[in-house]
Image (cartoon, rainbow, N blue to C red; front, top):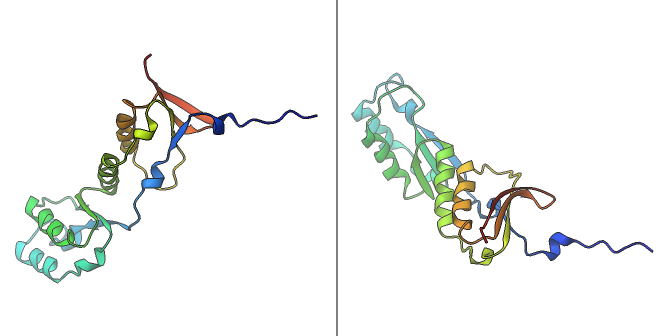
Length: 169
């Protein structure tokens, strides 16, 4: 007679937090203004403002946009602000920077609204192996929010996790 296999993970108080579950849908767009610069190095205000005026900003509806300039050019701050002012009515989020900064800002804002009370006094495992582009900073934000609540924090999967934090008794 074989002994019954008991799933200790399923029977434990271990709770899992998967950042992919809060990952918002929407296209990520890197909006590069270098093509709107004269010879990709100089911003001519009149031409730049015309490009901004003629551009179809509605195509960024429900997108997450990072505005950048990949050319080695001096771009005045107002140029980025002008673009942000045009994209903001359509996009879910606009940042000045790269796509990694965009994801960082998205997760920082999302985690400010996540209710973590259910994790109080429990061992928590932060799920690893994400298929979506979760920035490392999102894990740091999550740990900062969980640490005051959780009994312990681990990273990975229940079968092979790495301990990160254990509350003092």
